[in-house]
Length: 60
Image (tube, rainbow, N blue to C red):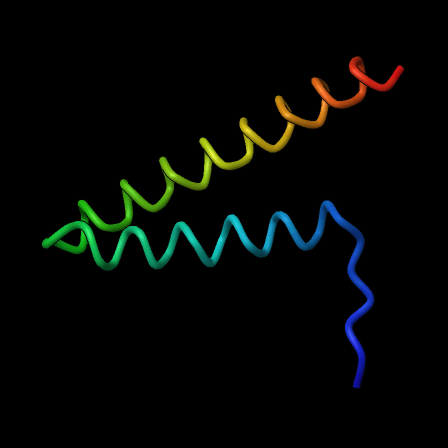
C-alpha cells in the first residue's frame, strides 16, 4: 500500500500529529492538553499559509 500525499496534505498530517504530541507532553490536565494542542495546530496552519505565500511572492 502506498500513500500518495501532496505537500499540503503531508503538512496537515505533520501539524496534527505534532500538535497532539506537544499537547500531551507539555500540559498536565486534559483540558489544558486539548486547548494547547488546538492552539499549536492553529499556529502550525497559520505558519503553513504564511510561509507558502512568502515563497509564492519570493519566486513570483
